Length: 487
Image (cartoon, rainbow, N blue to C red; front, side, top):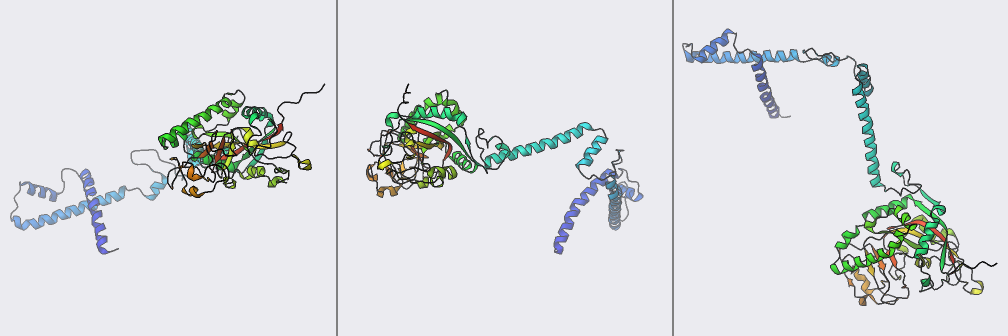
Protein backbone atom coordinates (compact mmCIF):
# COMPACT_ATOMS: atom_id res chain seq x y z
CA UNK A 1 0.00 0.00 0.00
CA UNK A 2 1.28 3.53 -0.80
CA UNK A 3 2.54 5.74 2.02
CA UNK A 4 -0.08 8.36 1.18
CA UNK A 5 -2.73 5.71 1.69
CA UNK A 6 -1.21 4.73 5.02
CA UNK A 7 -1.23 8.34 6.17
CA UNK A 8 -4.81 8.77 5.02
CA UNK A 9 -5.91 5.74 7.03
CA UNK A 10 -3.92 7.00 10.01
CA UNK A 11 -5.57 10.42 9.90
CA UNK A 12 -9.01 8.87 9.59
CA UNK A 13 -8.32 6.69 12.58
CA UNK A 14 -7.14 9.66 14.59
CA UNK A 15 -10.27 11.62 13.64
CA UNK A 16 -12.34 8.82 15.19
CA UNK A 17 -10.19 7.90 18.17
CA UNK A 18 -9.38 11.37 19.44
CA UNK A 19 -13.00 12.59 19.74
CA UNK A 20 -13.94 9.34 21.49
CA UNK A 21 -11.07 9.69 23.92
CA UNK A 22 -12.03 13.31 24.49
CA UNK A 23 -15.61 12.29 25.33
CA UNK A 24 -14.31 9.69 27.74
CA UNK A 25 -11.98 12.26 29.25
CA UNK A 26 -14.87 14.64 29.83
CA UNK A 27 -16.66 11.95 31.76
CA UNK A 28 -13.62 10.84 33.76
CA UNK A 29 -11.78 14.08 34.60
CA UNK A 30 -13.03 16.09 37.55
CA UNK A 31 -14.59 19.43 36.76
CA UNK A 32 -12.19 21.34 39.06
CA UNK A 33 -8.57 21.05 38.06
CA UNK A 34 -6.27 19.92 40.87
CA UNK A 35 -2.86 20.54 39.32
CA UNK A 36 -1.18 23.92 39.95
CA UNK A 37 -0.34 24.35 36.30
CA UNK A 38 -3.97 23.97 35.33
CA UNK A 39 -5.04 26.52 37.94
CA UNK A 40 -2.55 29.02 36.57
CA UNK A 41 -3.81 28.50 33.05
CA UNK A 42 -7.41 28.97 34.15
CA UNK A 43 -6.60 32.15 36.05
CA UNK A 44 -4.68 33.56 33.13
CA UNK A 45 -7.42 32.71 30.64
CA UNK A 46 -10.08 34.25 32.89
CA UNK A 47 -8.18 37.54 33.26
CA UNK A 48 -7.84 37.34 37.04
CA UNK A 49 -4.05 37.23 36.80
CA UNK A 50 -2.02 39.44 34.50
CA UNK A 51 1.13 37.86 33.32
CA UNK A 52 3.98 40.22 32.72
CA UNK A 53 5.42 39.99 29.37
CA UNK A 54 2.37 38.36 27.76
CA UNK A 55 4.10 37.96 24.46
CA UNK A 56 6.98 36.26 26.19
CA UNK A 57 4.80 33.76 27.99
CA UNK A 58 2.52 32.77 25.11
CA UNK A 59 4.93 30.16 23.94
CA UNK A 60 5.30 28.75 27.46
CA UNK A 61 1.50 28.54 27.88
CA UNK A 62 1.14 26.72 24.56
CA UNK A 63 3.88 24.28 25.49
CA UNK A 64 2.24 23.66 28.87
CA UNK A 65 -1.12 22.97 27.21
CA UNK A 66 0.47 20.44 24.90
CA UNK A 67 2.08 18.68 27.86
CA UNK A 68 -1.26 18.49 29.67
CA UNK A 69 -3.09 17.06 26.64
CA UNK A 70 -0.36 14.48 26.07
CA UNK A 71 -0.49 13.48 29.76
CA UNK A 72 -4.29 13.14 29.66
CA UNK A 73 -4.18 10.97 26.54
CA UNK A 74 -1.53 8.76 28.12
CA UNK A 75 -3.58 8.34 31.31
CA UNK A 76 -6.78 7.52 29.34
CA UNK A 77 -5.04 4.94 27.18
CA UNK A 78 -3.58 3.29 30.26
CA UNK A 79 -6.96 3.21 31.98
CA UNK A 80 -8.61 1.65 28.89
CA UNK A 81 -5.98 -1.06 28.71
CA UNK A 82 -6.36 -1.85 32.40
CA UNK A 83 -10.16 -2.16 32.15
CA UNK A 84 -10.14 -4.28 28.95
CA UNK A 85 -10.92 -7.95 29.73
CA UNK A 86 -8.20 -10.48 28.98
CA UNK A 87 -8.56 -13.71 26.97
CA UNK A 88 -8.51 -15.63 30.21
CA UNK A 89 -11.39 -13.55 31.54
CA UNK A 90 -13.41 -14.22 28.39
CA UNK A 91 -12.70 -17.96 28.46
CA UNK A 92 -13.59 -18.16 32.11
CA UNK A 93 -16.88 -16.42 31.39
CA UNK A 94 -16.37 -13.64 33.93
CA UNK A 95 -19.03 -10.98 34.23
CA UNK A 96 -18.56 -7.27 34.90
CA UNK A 97 -17.99 -5.52 38.19
CA UNK A 98 -21.71 -5.08 38.84
CA UNK A 99 -21.67 -8.39 40.67
CA UNK A 100 -23.30 -10.63 38.08
CA UNK A 101 -23.08 -14.39 38.53
CA UNK A 102 -19.94 -16.07 37.16
CA UNK A 103 -20.46 -18.36 34.17
CA UNK A 104 -19.15 -21.87 34.10
CA UNK A 105 -15.56 -22.30 33.00
CA UNK A 106 -16.60 -25.30 30.85
CA UNK A 107 -16.56 -24.53 27.13
CA UNK A 108 -19.90 -25.10 25.32
CA UNK A 109 -19.47 -27.97 22.89
CA UNK A 110 -22.96 -28.08 21.27
CA UNK A 111 -26.74 -28.09 21.64
CA UNK A 112 -26.65 -30.93 24.18
CA UNK A 113 -24.46 -28.85 26.50
CA UNK A 114 -27.01 -26.05 26.37
CA UNK A 115 -29.88 -28.43 27.11
CA UNK A 116 -27.94 -30.09 29.93
CA UNK A 117 -27.16 -26.70 31.46
CA UNK A 118 -30.82 -25.61 31.29
CA UNK A 119 -31.99 -28.87 32.87
CA UNK A 120 -29.37 -28.69 35.63
CA UNK A 121 -30.52 -25.17 36.40
CA UNK A 122 -34.17 -26.42 36.41
CA UNK A 123 -35.04 -24.05 33.58
CA UNK A 124 -37.46 -26.61 32.11
CA UNK A 125 -39.69 -24.15 30.29
CA UNK A 126 -36.78 -22.75 28.31
CA UNK A 127 -35.56 -26.24 27.51
CA UNK A 128 -39.02 -27.27 26.31
CA UNK A 129 -39.30 -24.16 24.13
CA UNK A 130 -35.93 -24.83 22.52
CA UNK A 131 -36.82 -28.46 21.75
CA UNK A 132 -40.25 -27.45 20.47
CA UNK A 133 -38.76 -24.75 18.29
CA UNK A 134 -36.33 -27.21 16.70
CA UNK A 135 -39.10 -29.71 16.00
CA UNK A 136 -41.36 -27.01 14.55
CA UNK A 137 -38.54 -25.83 12.31
CA UNK A 138 -37.95 -29.36 11.00
CA UNK A 139 -41.66 -29.88 10.33
CA UNK A 140 -41.89 -26.56 8.51
CA UNK A 141 -38.81 -27.44 6.44
CA UNK A 142 -40.34 -30.79 5.45
CA UNK A 143 -43.68 -29.18 4.54
CA UNK A 144 -42.00 -26.52 2.41
CA UNK A 145 -39.93 -29.21 0.67
CA UNK A 146 -43.08 -31.23 -0.10
CA UNK A 147 -44.87 -28.11 -1.36
CA UNK A 148 -41.97 -27.28 -3.67
CA UNK A 149 -41.79 -30.89 -4.81
CA UNK A 150 -45.50 -30.89 -5.65
CA UNK A 151 -44.91 -27.97 -7.97
CA UNK A 152 -41.99 -29.74 -9.63
CA UNK A 153 -43.67 -33.16 -9.89
CA UNK A 154 -47.46 -33.06 -10.30
CA UNK A 155 -49.31 -35.43 -8.01
CA UNK A 156 -51.21 -38.35 -9.55
CA UNK A 157 -54.91 -38.74 -8.65
CA UNK A 158 -55.46 -39.70 -5.02
CA UNK A 159 -57.68 -42.64 -5.97
CA UNK A 160 -54.76 -44.29 -7.79
CA UNK A 161 -52.92 -47.01 -5.92
CA UNK A 162 -49.73 -45.12 -6.72
CA UNK A 163 -51.33 -41.88 -5.54
CA UNK A 164 -52.19 -42.74 -1.93
CA UNK A 165 -48.76 -41.84 -0.55
CA UNK A 166 -47.55 -39.67 -3.40
CA UNK A 167 -47.30 -36.52 -1.26
CA UNK A 168 -44.29 -38.01 0.51
CA UNK A 169 -42.60 -39.35 -2.61
CA UNK A 170 -41.01 -37.47 -5.47
CA UNK A 171 -40.56 -40.60 -7.60
CA UNK A 172 -42.59 -41.15 -10.75
CA UNK A 173 -40.98 -44.49 -11.50
CA UNK A 174 -44.15 -46.57 -11.72
CA UNK A 175 -45.94 -48.07 -14.69
CA UNK A 176 -48.81 -50.32 -13.63
CA UNK A 177 -52.20 -51.58 -14.75
CA UNK A 178 -54.96 -52.38 -12.25
CA UNK A 179 -58.13 -54.32 -12.92
CA UNK A 180 -60.98 -52.16 -11.58
CA UNK A 181 -63.82 -54.09 -13.23
CA UNK A 182 -65.51 -54.99 -9.97
CA UNK A 183 -65.74 -51.38 -8.87
CA UNK A 184 -66.07 -49.49 -12.16
CA UNK A 185 -67.55 -52.10 -14.48
CA UNK A 186 -71.20 -51.09 -13.85
CA UNK A 187 -70.30 -47.40 -14.02
CA UNK A 188 -68.52 -47.69 -17.36
CA UNK A 189 -71.32 -49.89 -18.71
CA UNK A 190 -73.81 -47.17 -17.79
CA UNK A 191 -71.64 -44.54 -19.54
CA UNK A 192 -71.37 -46.74 -22.64
CA UNK A 193 -75.14 -47.21 -22.77
CA UNK A 194 -75.75 -43.48 -22.37
CA UNK A 195 -73.40 -42.53 -25.23
CA UNK A 196 -74.37 -45.31 -27.63
CA UNK A 197 -76.52 -44.37 -30.62
CA UNK A 198 -77.56 -47.67 -32.23
CA UNK A 199 -79.09 -46.01 -35.30
CA UNK A 200 -75.70 -44.49 -36.20
CA UNK A 201 -73.72 -47.73 -35.95
CA UNK A 202 -72.81 -48.94 -39.44
CA UNK A 203 -73.29 -45.47 -40.93
CA UNK A 204 -70.42 -43.70 -42.68
CA UNK A 205 -67.19 -44.63 -44.41
CA UNK A 206 -65.33 -45.75 -41.29
CA UNK A 207 -68.24 -47.68 -39.74
CA UNK A 208 -69.78 -49.42 -42.73
CA UNK A 209 -68.67 -52.83 -41.42
CA UNK A 210 -70.51 -52.54 -38.08
CA UNK A 211 -73.37 -55.02 -37.79
CA UNK A 212 -73.61 -54.89 -34.00
CA UNK A 213 -75.84 -52.43 -32.14
CA UNK A 214 -74.84 -52.77 -28.49
CA UNK A 215 -71.77 -53.11 -26.31
CA UNK A 216 -71.12 -55.21 -23.22
CA UNK A 217 -68.24 -54.14 -20.98
CA UNK A 218 -66.20 -57.18 -19.93
CA UNK A 219 -63.19 -55.60 -18.24
CA UNK A 220 -61.96 -52.18 -17.09
CA UNK A 221 -58.26 -51.51 -16.49
CA UNK A 222 -56.79 -48.36 -14.99
CA UNK A 223 -53.44 -47.39 -16.47
CA UNK A 224 -51.10 -45.74 -13.94
CA UNK A 225 -47.92 -44.41 -15.53
CA UNK A 226 -45.96 -41.88 -13.50
CA UNK A 227 -43.92 -40.51 -16.37
CA UNK A 228 -46.86 -40.07 -18.74
CA UNK A 229 -49.01 -38.58 -15.99
CA UNK A 230 -46.34 -35.97 -15.26
CA UNK A 231 -46.27 -34.99 -18.93
CA UNK A 232 -50.03 -34.71 -19.11
CA UNK A 233 -50.49 -32.87 -15.80
CA UNK A 234 -47.80 -30.37 -16.78
CA UNK A 235 -49.39 -29.84 -20.21
CA UNK A 236 -52.80 -29.35 -18.57
CA UNK A 237 -51.37 -26.83 -16.12
CA UNK A 238 -49.87 -24.65 -18.85
CA UNK A 239 -53.02 -24.79 -21.00
CA UNK A 240 -54.57 -21.29 -20.91
CA UNK A 241 -57.89 -20.85 -19.17
CA UNK A 242 -60.85 -21.13 -21.51
CA UNK A 243 -62.32 -17.78 -20.46
CA UNK A 244 -59.01 -15.99 -21.02
CA UNK A 245 -58.52 -17.45 -24.50
CA UNK A 246 -62.11 -16.66 -25.38
CA UNK A 247 -61.54 -12.97 -24.66
CA UNK A 248 -58.71 -12.84 -27.21
CA UNK A 249 -61.05 -13.90 -30.04
CA UNK A 250 -62.82 -11.43 -32.33
CA UNK A 251 -66.42 -10.83 -31.28
CA UNK A 252 -68.01 -12.94 -34.03
CA UNK A 253 -65.70 -15.94 -33.51
CA UNK A 254 -65.96 -15.60 -29.72
CA UNK A 255 -69.74 -15.66 -29.72
CA UNK A 256 -69.93 -18.59 -32.15
CA UNK A 257 -67.35 -20.61 -30.18
CA UNK A 258 -68.98 -19.95 -26.82
CA UNK A 259 -72.46 -20.77 -28.13
CA UNK A 260 -71.36 -24.07 -29.67
CA UNK A 261 -69.31 -25.03 -26.62
CA UNK A 262 -72.29 -24.46 -24.35
CA UNK A 263 -74.30 -26.76 -26.61
CA UNK A 264 -71.65 -29.47 -26.19
CA UNK A 265 -71.73 -29.02 -22.42
CA UNK A 266 -75.51 -29.29 -22.48
CA UNK A 267 -75.24 -32.65 -24.26
CA UNK A 268 -72.83 -33.84 -21.55
CA UNK A 269 -74.99 -32.60 -18.68
CA UNK A 270 -76.95 -35.87 -18.66
CA UNK A 271 -73.79 -37.75 -17.73
CA UNK A 272 -72.93 -35.43 -14.90
CA UNK A 273 -76.45 -35.59 -13.51
CA UNK A 274 -76.73 -39.37 -13.73
CA UNK A 275 -76.76 -41.01 -10.26
CA UNK A 276 -74.25 -43.66 -11.37
CA UNK A 277 -71.94 -41.87 -13.84
CA UNK A 278 -72.07 -38.43 -12.18
CA UNK A 279 -70.23 -39.37 -8.94
CA UNK A 280 -67.59 -41.21 -11.00
CA UNK A 281 -66.90 -38.15 -13.17
CA UNK A 282 -66.80 -35.84 -10.17
CA UNK A 283 -64.29 -38.06 -8.39
CA UNK A 284 -61.91 -37.70 -11.32
CA UNK A 285 -61.37 -34.04 -10.40
CA UNK A 286 -61.49 -32.73 -13.96
CA UNK A 287 -60.29 -29.17 -14.54
CA UNK A 288 -63.37 -27.42 -15.92
CA UNK A 289 -61.55 -24.10 -16.26
CA UNK A 290 -59.48 -25.70 -19.04
CA UNK A 291 -62.32 -27.88 -20.35
CA UNK A 292 -60.78 -31.19 -19.34
CA UNK A 293 -63.04 -34.02 -20.53
CA UNK A 294 -63.32 -37.83 -20.56
CA UNK A 295 -63.48 -38.98 -24.20
CA UNK A 296 -63.29 -42.29 -26.06
CA UNK A 297 -60.47 -43.39 -28.36
CA UNK A 298 -60.55 -46.67 -30.29
CA UNK A 299 -57.41 -48.49 -31.39
CA UNK A 300 -56.76 -52.08 -32.63
CA UNK A 301 -55.64 -54.90 -30.34
CA UNK A 302 -53.36 -57.79 -31.27
CA UNK A 303 -55.01 -59.98 -33.90
CA UNK A 304 -56.87 -57.12 -35.59
CA UNK A 305 -57.73 -57.63 -39.27
CA UNK A 306 -58.15 -55.36 -42.27
CA UNK A 307 -61.18 -55.11 -44.55
CA UNK A 308 -60.12 -58.26 -46.37
CA UNK A 309 -59.88 -60.31 -43.19
CA UNK A 310 -56.08 -60.36 -43.11
CA UNK A 311 -54.33 -60.04 -39.75
CA UNK A 312 -52.39 -56.78 -39.67
CA UNK A 313 -51.22 -56.80 -36.02
CA UNK A 314 -50.25 -60.38 -35.17
CA UNK A 315 -48.67 -59.72 -31.75
CA UNK A 316 -49.40 -57.45 -28.83
CA UNK A 317 -46.06 -55.68 -29.26
CA UNK A 318 -47.13 -54.64 -32.76
CA UNK A 319 -50.65 -53.53 -31.84
CA UNK A 320 -51.34 -49.77 -31.59
CA UNK A 321 -53.29 -50.30 -28.38
CA UNK A 322 -50.20 -51.64 -26.64
CA UNK A 323 -48.06 -48.79 -27.99
CA UNK A 324 -50.45 -46.20 -26.54
CA UNK A 325 -50.33 -47.89 -23.13
CA UNK A 326 -46.54 -47.80 -23.14
CA UNK A 327 -45.79 -44.47 -24.80
CA UNK A 328 -49.04 -42.50 -24.61
CA UNK A 329 -50.87 -40.79 -27.47
CA UNK A 330 -48.68 -39.41 -30.25
CA UNK A 331 -50.29 -36.94 -32.64
CA UNK A 332 -47.35 -37.25 -35.05
CA UNK A 333 -48.62 -40.66 -36.15
CA UNK A 334 -51.89 -39.21 -37.44
CA UNK A 335 -52.52 -38.95 -41.18
CA UNK A 336 -52.73 -35.46 -42.64
CA UNK A 337 -55.40 -36.86 -44.99
CA UNK A 338 -57.77 -37.22 -42.06
CA UNK A 339 -60.95 -35.16 -42.06
CA UNK A 340 -59.38 -32.74 -39.56
CA UNK A 341 -55.76 -33.31 -40.50
CA UNK A 342 -52.97 -34.96 -38.53
CA UNK A 343 -53.82 -35.29 -34.86
CA UNK A 344 -55.20 -37.60 -32.17
CA UNK A 345 -58.93 -38.17 -32.64
CA UNK A 346 -61.45 -38.67 -29.83
CA UNK A 347 -65.20 -39.03 -29.60
CA UNK A 348 -67.75 -38.33 -26.89
CA UNK A 349 -69.78 -41.34 -28.10
CA UNK A 350 -68.62 -44.94 -27.96
CA UNK A 351 -69.95 -45.61 -31.48
CA UNK A 352 -67.39 -43.33 -33.15
CA UNK A 353 -64.45 -44.72 -31.19
CA UNK A 354 -65.59 -48.28 -31.87
CA UNK A 355 -65.26 -47.74 -35.63
CA UNK A 356 -61.46 -47.44 -35.13
CA UNK A 357 -61.08 -50.34 -32.69
CA UNK A 358 -60.45 -53.02 -35.36
CA UNK A 359 -62.02 -56.23 -36.73
CA UNK A 360 -61.29 -59.67 -35.26
CA UNK A 361 -63.49 -62.41 -36.81
CA UNK A 362 -61.97 -64.78 -39.32
CA UNK A 363 -63.32 -64.48 -42.85
CA UNK A 364 -64.35 -67.93 -44.04
CA UNK A 365 -64.27 -68.17 -47.85
CA UNK A 366 -63.31 -64.47 -47.94
CA UNK A 367 -66.74 -63.34 -46.77
CA UNK A 368 -67.33 -60.79 -44.04
CA UNK A 369 -68.89 -62.63 -41.10
CA UNK A 370 -70.11 -59.42 -39.46
CA UNK A 371 -69.00 -57.88 -36.20
CA UNK A 372 -71.44 -59.40 -33.69
CA UNK A 373 -69.56 -61.36 -31.03
CA UNK A 374 -66.18 -59.69 -31.57
CA UNK A 375 -64.16 -58.54 -28.58
CA UNK A 376 -62.43 -55.19 -28.90
CA UNK A 377 -61.08 -52.44 -26.68
CA UNK A 378 -60.90 -48.66 -26.43
CA UNK A 379 -59.58 -45.99 -24.09
CA UNK A 380 -61.58 -43.66 -21.90
CA UNK A 381 -59.03 -40.86 -21.79
CA UNK A 382 -58.51 -37.52 -20.12
CA UNK A 383 -58.34 -34.79 -22.75
CA UNK A 384 -57.45 -31.12 -22.17
CA UNK A 385 -59.69 -29.51 -24.80
CA UNK A 386 -58.93 -25.97 -23.65
CA UNK A 387 -60.31 -23.36 -26.04
CA UNK A 388 -61.34 -25.22 -29.22
CA UNK A 389 -61.90 -24.11 -32.78
CA UNK A 390 -65.29 -25.58 -33.70
CA UNK A 391 -65.87 -26.27 -37.39
CA UNK A 392 -68.64 -27.61 -39.63
CA UNK A 393 -66.40 -28.39 -42.60
CA UNK A 394 -63.46 -30.73 -43.17
CA UNK A 395 -59.92 -29.44 -42.63
CA UNK A 396 -57.66 -31.93 -44.38
CA UNK A 397 -53.88 -31.40 -44.13
CA UNK A 398 -54.25 -29.43 -40.91
CA UNK A 399 -51.30 -29.95 -38.58
CA UNK A 400 -52.11 -27.48 -35.84
CA UNK A 401 -55.17 -25.45 -34.82
CA UNK A 402 -55.77 -21.94 -36.10
CA UNK A 403 -54.89 -18.96 -33.94
CA UNK A 404 -57.42 -17.31 -31.66
CA UNK A 405 -58.02 -14.71 -34.37
CA UNK A 406 -59.12 -17.46 -36.78
CA UNK A 407 -55.97 -17.44 -38.98
CA UNK A 408 -54.84 -20.75 -40.51
CA UNK A 409 -51.30 -21.48 -41.69
CA UNK A 410 -50.67 -19.88 -45.07
CA UNK A 411 -49.05 -23.01 -46.54
CA UNK A 412 -52.47 -24.68 -46.47
CA UNK A 413 -53.49 -22.60 -49.49
CA UNK A 414 -51.53 -24.99 -51.74
CA UNK A 415 -52.43 -28.17 -49.83
CA UNK A 416 -54.19 -30.89 -51.80
CA UNK A 417 -57.37 -32.35 -50.35
CA UNK A 418 -59.01 -35.65 -51.25
CA UNK A 419 -62.51 -34.70 -50.23
CA UNK A 420 -64.47 -31.57 -49.58
CA UNK A 421 -63.73 -28.04 -50.69
CA UNK A 422 -60.17 -26.92 -51.54
CA UNK A 423 -58.64 -24.59 -48.97
CA UNK A 424 -58.90 -21.65 -51.34
CA UNK A 425 -62.69 -22.05 -51.34
CA UNK A 426 -63.27 -22.72 -47.65
CA UNK A 427 -63.65 -19.03 -46.86
CA UNK A 428 -61.02 -19.14 -44.13
CA UNK A 429 -58.26 -16.59 -43.45
CA UNK A 430 -54.72 -17.86 -43.99
CA UNK A 431 -51.93 -15.79 -42.53
CA UNK A 432 -48.53 -16.06 -40.88
CA UNK A 433 -49.10 -14.52 -37.46
CA UNK A 434 -47.81 -14.49 -33.90
CA UNK A 435 -51.18 -14.90 -32.17
CA UNK A 436 -51.80 -17.59 -29.58
CA UNK A 437 -53.34 -20.79 -30.91
CA UNK A 438 -56.55 -22.61 -30.14
CA UNK A 439 -55.99 -25.80 -28.17
CA UNK A 440 -58.09 -28.26 -30.21
CA UNK A 441 -60.40 -28.58 -33.20
CA UNK A 442 -63.91 -30.01 -32.92
CA UNK A 443 -66.01 -31.22 -35.83
CA UNK A 444 -69.54 -30.38 -34.75
CA UNK A 445 -72.14 -31.98 -37.08
CA UNK A 446 -73.95 -31.57 -39.30
CA UNK A 447 -70.97 -31.00 -41.61
CA UNK A 448 -71.58 -28.73 -44.57
CA UNK A 449 -69.15 -30.02 -47.23
CA UNK A 450 -70.44 -33.61 -47.57
CA UNK A 451 -67.15 -35.18 -46.61
CA UNK A 452 -67.51 -39.01 -46.84
CA UNK A 453 -65.95 -39.50 -43.40
CA UNK A 454 -68.30 -37.06 -41.75
CA UNK A 455 -70.99 -38.57 -39.51
CA UNK A 456 -73.43 -37.36 -36.94
CA UNK A 457 -70.86 -38.16 -34.27
CA UNK A 458 -68.88 -35.27 -32.82
CA UNK A 459 -65.08 -35.55 -33.11
CA UNK A 460 -62.36 -33.89 -31.00
CA UNK A 461 -58.82 -33.58 -32.36
CA UNK A 462 -55.68 -32.74 -30.36
CA UNK A 463 -52.48 -31.70 -32.13
CA UNK A 464 -50.30 -31.76 -29.02
CA UNK A 465 -49.71 -34.29 -26.25
CA UNK A 466 -52.45 -33.09 -23.90
CA UNK A 467 -54.29 -36.37 -23.34
CA UNK A 468 -53.83 -39.32 -20.99
CA UNK A 469 -55.17 -42.91 -21.57
CA UNK A 470 -56.43 -43.49 -18.04
CA UNK A 471 -58.95 -46.32 -18.51
CA UNK A 472 -58.78 -49.24 -20.95
CA UNK A 473 -62.20 -50.77 -21.64
CA UNK A 474 -62.58 -54.27 -23.07
CA UNK A 475 -66.02 -54.98 -24.50
CA UNK A 476 -68.03 -57.36 -26.67
CA UNK A 477 -70.09 -56.33 -29.70
CA UNK A 478 -73.68 -57.50 -29.42
CA UNK A 479 -76.84 -57.70 -31.45
CA UNK A 480 -79.63 -55.19 -31.13
CA UNK A 481 -81.58 -57.25 -28.61
CA UNK A 482 -80.73 -60.07 -26.28
CA UNK A 483 -81.67 -63.38 -27.95
CA UNK A 484 -84.74 -64.87 -26.32
CA UNK A 485 -84.13 -67.95 -24.22
CA UNK A 486 -85.57 -71.15 -25.62
CA UNK A 487 -87.86 -73.28 -23.40
